[in-house]
Length: 354
Length: 219
Image (cartoon, rainbow over all chains, first blue to last red; front, side, top):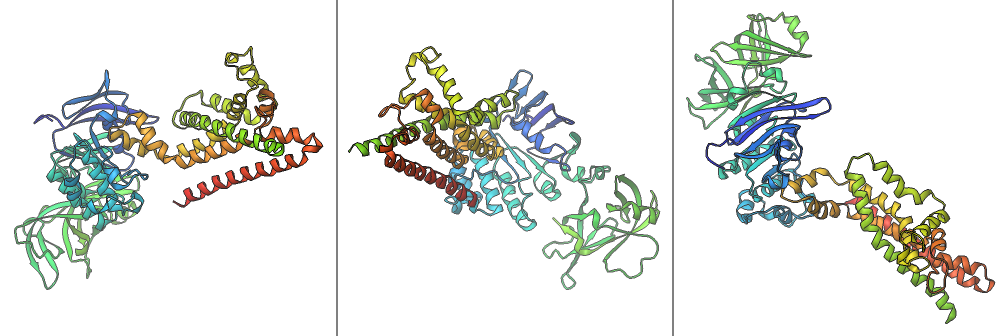
């Protein structure tokens, strides 16, 4: 790939029945995350890029090369793509070694198996691999085909949370070690923040937003997408208290937010935090004694009603913005409108440090 | 020794006819089943009906139609196959194709298209995908279809006597021989021996099909 050329330059329409995917996408970022609710067309987008589905019209250029337009449709086998799906799609009749070498274009077998720590698995059959091993082998198989573009379709979504983090570390290692650009489909914010350079929001078949991860994920109106139910914050450490098992971070103007203890972090270090919108509790009037460590005076700045979901955005004392997810009944009972003063309650344990 | 050739002859002929029929039926059935399983076109029901026709036609009618094709004045008459053991093979093929297509189609439809796509992404063309992924993954169903085709070929009678006749040493298969010997009091024990041998072979074939299906289900 030439330097500076777009990794993806695509503008196309794909249609099936009532569903239409209209994509206009230009990204020079090396790793682009495609983010959105299920059914938004994420997998269809990848299938169009790989050639497994053919758009009705438009063009697709990958790494500066046209693979689809009005006069050309390069078959999947010639697009040099490494595709890893949710469950890996390993060939069940071949052992791990033959799966890995199935599409091998260059003998980097030892290097790849060492990187992903799958060398001890090569004589096993796929049926005898754990979920995490299976996904690492699938990733290795894709890398060994020396692709010009990696497509990862929710590669970690079938794994439980602790295992997902561990396999994510391997994916991050792949990103660090290989120049290969990647389109990464996920609905997990942590993966986006850790792995992506650029985020594309997809909703009901259309690109509804794009930009750098930390900006896009917390943009106003993001809650409208339904997929965004988390608050992602980058906040500096104030201090830590090992005895109490807490660390305080700065919500702005010295307003503290208590989070689980981060022993190795120094005051001033910036933490990536995630608070699920459903873990944000609102209160009006006197709150009395509550178990939540964080009670922060705030003001409602935005209300988004989407069917039976209500998202309330508040500006906390200090300036930080938070989304809370409540029911329409709670909205009406509390009489929340824009500019209402509320207290925001967040339990220490509800704050996840990424 | 005459008794043994009267029993052994039809057995060897039947095994030869059935083996050859199976060799022809399996690739044919895989091809037809692939078209049925992987394509969505409007000619599909026409193809299915045509393939399955021998299942519902009276065997004599199937034989008659085959004779029209293979007979001296038929389109393939020049090959001179009618009333030779090749005509028995043709009859066996026609009646066993529907069974083999059915099991093979179920097996091909059970192959996850995502695995075929994985092979395409890894640089394989359509033929390689079929040979390296689809067929190996459907191998148990294909093998089951082959055994069924063999068993059905072994039992073919109605169409065979019309298109191949019942010439001893040439076209006298096990079922034809049983039918012929039954009409001759002196051949009663030969008929009975063939009946038991035929039943034994068919039973063994069905056992094999079920054992394959069972081990496939356990995997």
